[in-house]
Amino acid sequence: TDPALIRNFCIIAHIDHGKSTLADRMLQLTGIVEERQMRAQYLDRMDIERERGITIKSQAVRMPWSPTSEDGTATPHILNMIDTPGHVDFTYEVSRSLAACEGCILLVDAAQGIEAQTLANLYLAMENDLTIIPVLNKIDLPAAQPDKFAAELAHLIGCEPEDVLRVSAKTGEGVGELLDEVVRLVPAPVGVKDAPARAMIFDSVYDAYRGVVTYVKVVDGELGRRERIRMMSTNAAHELLEIGTNSPEMTAADGLGVGEVGYLITGVKDVRQSKVGDTITQFHKGATEALPGYKDPKPMVFSGLYPLDGSDYPELRDALDKLQLNDAALVYEPETSAALGFGFRVGFLGLLHLEVIRERLEREFGLDLIATAPNVVYRVVMEDRTEHTVTNPSEFPTGKVDEVHEPVVRATLLAPSEFIGAIMELCQTRRGNLQGMDYLSEDRVELRYTLPLAEIVFDFFDALKSKTRGYASLDYEPTGEQSADLVKVDILLHGDKVDAFSAIVHKDKAYAYGVRMAGKLRELIPRQQFEVPIQAAVGSRIIARETVRAIRKDVLAKCYGGDISRKRKLLEKQKEGKKRMKVVGRVEVPQEAFIAALSSD
Ligand code: GTP
Image (cartoon, rainbow, N blue to C red; front, side, top):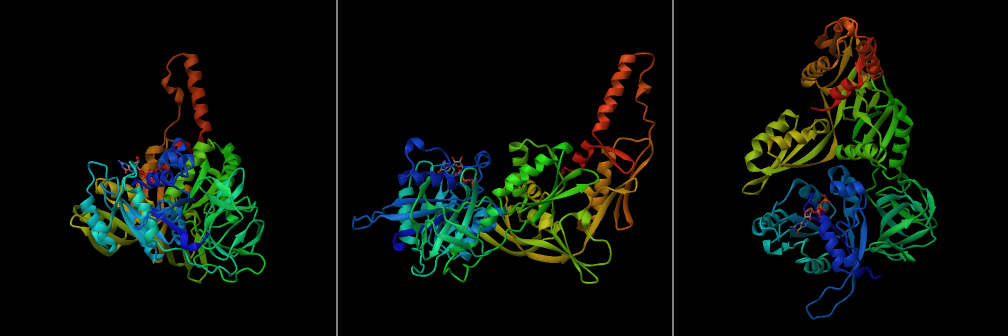
């Protein structure tokens, strides 16, 4: 295909602003999905995506479109629509999808207006120099305020309010005109036809039947069927078993040329061999310089996952192995905890990623899990200049610590202006730094903060929602690290450390954490035959103490007289209970107590 007739674009939108619905309409209007085959959200294929209504994995679809020009002639064009994952955790994947496009549709719900995610994605699109087409969706809704939000959008991206298109993805109104505008406004891809091939991987998904399916955009040259290719980040060689385009089902082709978007299959079985952001070239006489922007996916949040029933450990390992085939960002290694037994320390891109993986483990693999409170990755520099990377608080080094570095994020918060005070107060208590503030319109404001990631990981989103009656939206992306006054707080039961409760917190919050955990545990731990002190400590210094008082544990004391069957029943029950007990040092703790203490509230 002549690159001049290709348009590569994506749709960026806040959750629920109608991206999938608009994509559906486009598939229908361009005729590649027939009416009767149409099902809602054609492109979201994973069950969990459908259920939660979120798009996790991006895909690309090729659609023919002949725009009606002013003189009445129609030139057939090819539109490649690249679906981007919507959530913050997947920012890196979003940015790679954007890099495969020359333009994007900025889709905003005409009843809601701009949200934080719209902004975060818009900034990414601007960084990638994309042509931006502002569009208001859901104009069929009675609550729509298209004039108000067109003005807001125009103000934001610096265009005229009349330039903001208005569509209804539900009824299809305005969608044809939108496709015409895509052809008119989005630049055609440019690349060097006679150069060695360079194709950028913007997605890679595992398919049980076909192995890994890799989605690419060819920037320079051409890739053909049966060619030997090389992954430039690893130098690994593969043979191209199949190459083709999606429209919307996979259709094999002889090759892909400059500006084209499609898929390829090499027979690798693991997405980590075909990484998002990597450059593919020919094995022989290939390119020497990779396309810019490759980054290894880096886990930002860690949590210990333990099977509730210790004998499920092998199943948990198998399940993680399976999930990793399709998720290059998921990392894990075995870990043992005195309190929780055998499990894994698992690394995630962010909280949603954690939640999705945990839910898949429980739902698709039928596992019951205990998860420790999520923590971020710390870089600890000792006085002798040695460095430790800490992904598990209980492994915080002992000895002379010079500096502790923690990851920070750039957060974008958006809310009605009446909540500015509440948001500032919240960010203040979470060690945030205000970077800037802008009014999007008279009554809506955007606040930009840098915040420690660790402070967001702990229920920040819930706190924000409750302080703003659900009106604020939040997005963030990692921006580096800072050194901070952080200490490890340990929780001791009868003098023994309970590893699962160790936490790294800011010095000013150590006391509050210690008091809260000790208090929680006192309520949850049953009385034993001896007195059990519960202590919180920073190093060897005790900062909080509670006591579970001793009791003579005579369950039969209540049974006066000779009701032997009742006695037996009580003894049975006690035995049952024992099985679910974990022993920490000399103290028996019911598993439920750990779970309750670990649950964040
Ligand atoms: P994520 O995949 O979660 O990012 O959401 P999305 O942006 O893809 O939104 P989706 O297409 O799932 O639409 C969200 C809801 O809005 C659905 O209930 C749609 O039926 C509805 N919706 C989408 N477009 C329109 C529209 O033009 N008018 C009306 N009335 N409803 C719409």
